[in-house]
Amino acid sequence: MRPAHALSLVVALLSFACDSDKFTAPSALTTLPTPIVTATPAPVPTPAPIPFQPFQAVFTVSPDPADGTDPLQVTFDMCATTGINLTYEIDTDVTRGLGPRGQVPCRVTFTFVAQSRIAVFTTAMPTMARSTATEMHYDYRITVTDTGRTPPVSAIKEGTIHVLPDMSKPRAGAR
Image (cartoon, rainbow, N blue to C red; front, side, top):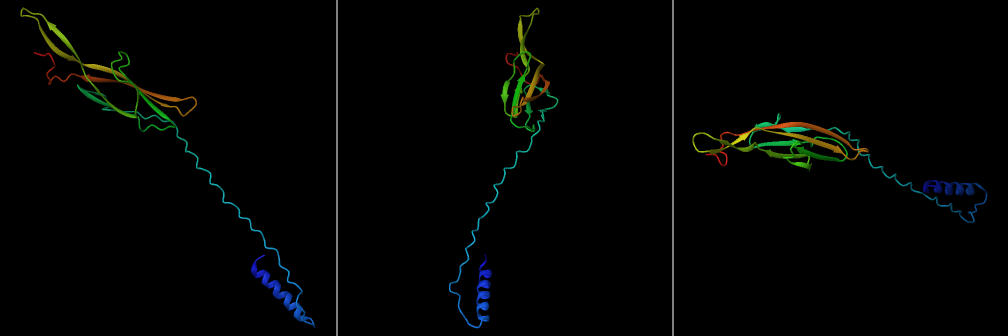
């Protein structure tokens, strides 16, 4: 009961007692029990669910096409890929095992070179060796895997890097 209601009750009792021929004060004022107020605890906020991240692989190879002269820097970028728990792998020169391979960060740059070889020419003059370079092709496979799914989901991009010799630079062993 609120204090204002309790006061109204006391005033009403006194005015009732005053209306009678004889004024008699109440023998004892009855105190009303104090109401027990129970506070309802605020609800514990439910943490917002992690938004669903669909797996969508995004591969960028730069330059595109991956062709150029020795030495050729190629950047493999998979950072725009969406998913839950992503891993990135690269395997270059798949058939010969000459290039980098294994787990990498989402963006990585490698330098590829044209292969040197020694050509021997025999003429009436004494034998001479000359260094030449040949065009190289590196096959690559880049893989993004979302290991946060059951079963894990992967996407693969394959391509070829073409490296041409830079004939303007002298080669080791050239005469």
